[in-house]
Length: 324
Ligand code: GZL
Image (tube, rainbow, N blue to C red):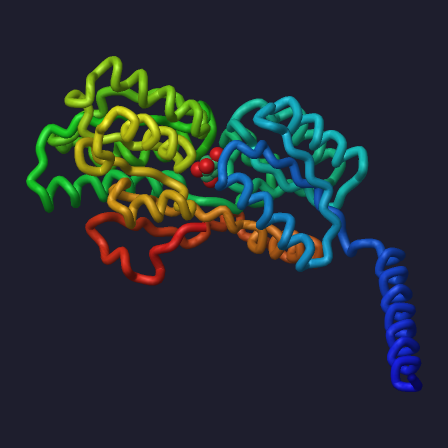
């Protein structure tokens, strides 16, 4: 009986201490507050990116005010204005499109609040309105997609490949640069023809609609390759192809970008030919820049994560071939 009483007493003391510790934490203000305007939740990539920023803020002990704009630029502008009014220490945002930010970012500069772009850029004309960019080199991603197709054509003696391109959100950095990098990689090679580029807005549902209308227009024998700017749209493409009895990666080659688990698993299962990586895990790089800014240190203007590509021409049993 005495042992039980001692145990209960110990538990009470521990809970009392921990309660005190929690109260103490609750009274501690975060070292710094970051205002984060996220553009939406349109894809697995975006959801993983949000989680990465939230986790990194926690790891650094920074307060995070996050506003999700649900794909509306005006909501991002409102969020940034609220961060300015709240006088956050740093503004981090992923601009849904490259244009239309001059006024609100000028207000942030006038308020003396540094702005870090994550994942997407703004128009170069406003270069002086942000301090740093953390995100992919989308042009390089597009080139990797094109360079895979050249390797594939070389390896299998393919000629005159008619390519349908399903693009991401118009005027967004990943859409513009994945398109440009891909076209530049193939430029001058007569084996490749981009027959049409359509907007799938990075959404699975629109990727499905695009693929259905492309098949209506060209027929299954009129398309040799689909180059899709993200995995969400590619999963919509797979739904349509397999519903129509078309063997993806065989009847029509499939190249996608992001590298989420479901796409990499489809690659390993022979349903996709190439997955170009685009890591969503940018939170750590962002918060290291925030910390450097807080300490008055210089920060790099551009921080690109390391990225690669996986394809059916590689050893897919390699442990590095995995999705996020
Ligand atoms: C790329 C990111 C894109 C992803 C899509 O960094 O901006 O937006 O490729 C996401 O999945 O919707």
